[in-house]
Length: 153
Image 1 (cartoon, rainbow, N blue to C red):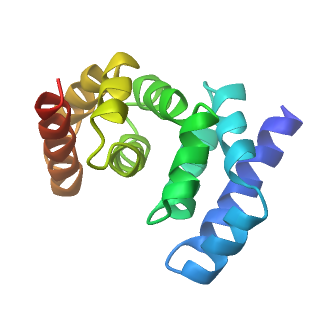
Image 2: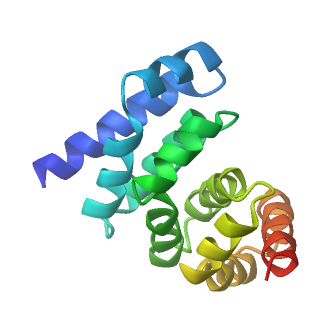
Image 3: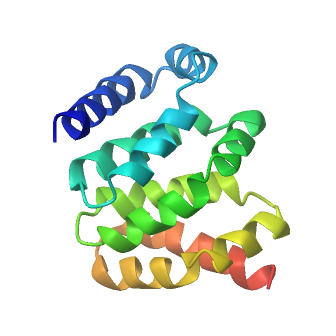
């Protein structure tokens, strides 16, 4: 339980210092945070707080950086994000940030879109979309992902 709390707190702190601060996000990437974040997602799938903060952090450290996206995918990030969305559909921040990560990972890439679908992303997106019908940002991201998945199927 202590390791889980440390992971939760570490991701929360890193997310807070990298959100809306590109310089800090770059520093976090360079420091090698991607693999440990994905490892935390995988190690603590039942922990709502670990999943919430890791999905937030992963989005902030990969957005706009193709190498970071590739590193996150290679570390198992796509599967971890899909599993996180499936495990915690009720807390809107998990699918909301998970969708943003998936949008980064599948950006105009039919191979990665197919990989996301194979990992269960289509079902996860539909489920979260249904669970949060009034969250307009989540709905827009879900629509974008579904269009991307269908286009590349």
